[in-house]
Length: 142
Image 1 (cartoon, helix red, strand yellow):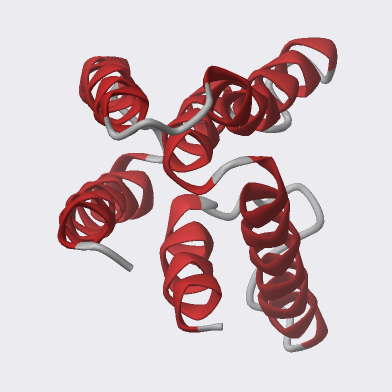
Image 2 (image 1 turned 180 degrees about the vertical axis):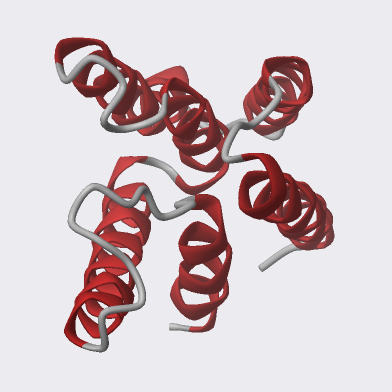
């Protein structure tokens, strides 16, 4: 991993940390920081010589999540799609799919534990970005 890649990874961790805190507190994520991050990360990756197809395919995972959010009428947050577009611009499609899979597994496990111990009901909405943050660290270490 090069210096620029490490800087991008550090910036994404900082972004995910801030968004995770906001997601836990407000159950909503602001759009503007995500759009700015998406533009910056995509431009830097393209300038580094990463294929536009690789960057676009990574962003496509976020677009797909946004579409699922619209179809499910908000059962998945629209801003979660934006978060995955940002991570996808940096990671590419395959690593972003890994990130999403690990995030979903972690969220499922935590949700199941909370349900079993009757801490929440079936309709409770878990903030998803904290799971994305933890998963990002896991995926980057693997």
